[in-house]
Image (cartoon, rainbow, N blue to C red; front, top):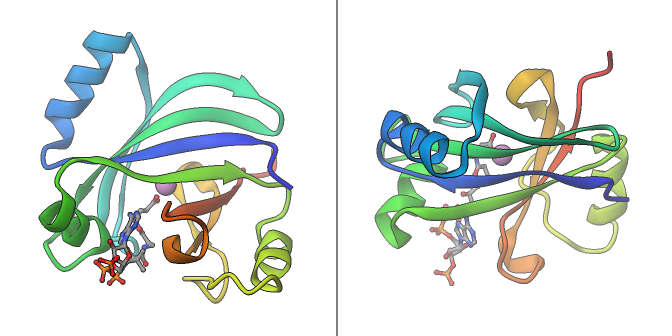
Length: 140
Ligand code: CMX
Ligand code: CO
């Protein structure tokens, strides 16, 4: 079902500051920046490698406000790993399969993700405490 780890999402207070840190420390390159109002984030994708069906990235996330998923997470837990995203061939099909096993889906249908992807989230409490995202890369 999972083809690769698409990205690890990291919550931070200051996106520009963390981009500079990751660029300098790990020599990663920003390949996309986006504001996603629906998800309540300003974000940057830093490229790591290319794999089966798409690349893998670090996703740096700054909340657009305190009453957003990442804003609430920062207030509760502080900066750090927020979610892990797995690449799947078909996000709607993966949602059906995983939802059919009793895992709560946080999205009724796939939503718009970064770089033209389709995404959906699974409830962390149903999958071992890790907020899990499913990602279908855009078709070329
Ligand atoms: N990782 C692991 N556990 C988490 C979590 C996270 N990121 N966020 C919340 N939780 C846990 C909380 O610790 C809490 O557990 P306890 O009850 O034991 O304290 C429980 O889940 C409920 O958390 P909450 O603070 O009450 O927050 P909500 O239920 O209001 O929201 C969640 C949590 C996961 C449903 C919400 O953040 C969500 O819908 N997330 C999906 C969308 C998202 O995160 N978008 C931003 C990223 C966009 C992108 O990647 O492109
Ligand atoms: Co993500």
